[in-house]
Image: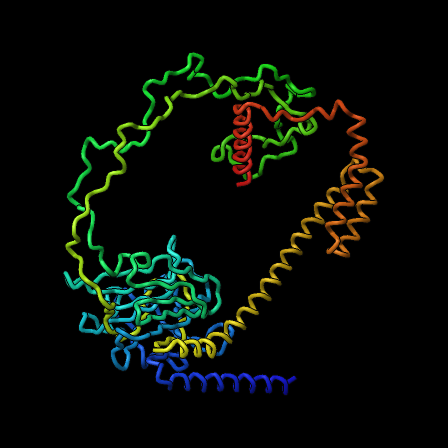
Length: 526
């Protein structure tokens, strides 16, 4: 056994060494611009924000179930900010740029972000130790989930040459966030033709045109014309496509004040109704608690219990005729709608030239000088790993295969095993409930001599749970036989069904009685 363990450890070490060599080889290739594996502690190369609102503690921690390290969000309900500068500014114009990183929501994600920000030069007005949500960025990318928000953000922050202001342009119809607790890798590929491809776990989820108003809001390329904000709808504009028919008249037989329901005068009190018996009676076996204080707790009253005489009767107490739908009810009368001869259509303000319009040639995203994580989250356990910037998607694919894929495969297999175990436990619990019910059925008094047959069938099902459905069918057949005899031999009694049409006021009385019963019991138990 010890020898087997040593061999397994050696094999794991060899695999990790092989993966490490592969990653180093990829990183050494010309296509890798920035890569952070978090194999070593982040404290010497990453700078934690010192802003007073960002109290969340970052930790260098292993991913659950792996020997692979990452950057961990360690506390709940905190703001976090951390940044690492690139060796040199990254120009994004007229080139392919691949942004990629892993994140694992080890405790799920109810409300919070797990995205990255790719920051503009510090001349734009920020410093690493003062990094916060106002620090200017060029691109924001990654998952975000809270309330109705459930998306993988891709936002470009562009300068308007007309007024010099920066504006965020958000990807429309973004992919949803995988909300399991597995490792996932997010990839954004910016192409020289101003298109962007969003991938999750190496699979393309969204392709968008940065210049298309159908893909980004607000659009990167401004509209040439806009609605005139000064234009107002004329007071005499008729935008009603249909209007009430003024010539229509209410039919003579239309009664607006007829009630929705009326008393069913044809209804008769069911045979066996116990008019003189209340639904509830005093519990004569109840005893006043020794610690009951009449001055403090009030006069003690016996709690109520269901009247056993009512169990076999169709009903107890005062019987009243039920309500039924009024066949004469028609409700308020309204004249029918007809086409409006004066309909002028849907009003729209006139179009005017857009004063903020400008010609856009190639997209000009400002250079990136740092990678930052600035989030607010209600969950801990968010782990970031393998942050990559590359100029070739092949490099990103190689790192995905070398780092993320082996972890994901193990996690997926473990998840499947856990789900199967949970399903089996749930099935066992359901079977227990089924057998409990079957044993209660076996105790029904009308089964008589058939009880032993039912118990034999239950015993057989308990030995072979896989045949429980067939056993239930057999038990039903056994039960039906004596039940039919009882029904056929007591036709009068079969008609004694409780009146489902009892008035709503009667139901309210029952609810009041139940509430009073609960109140007395609660007071007594206290």
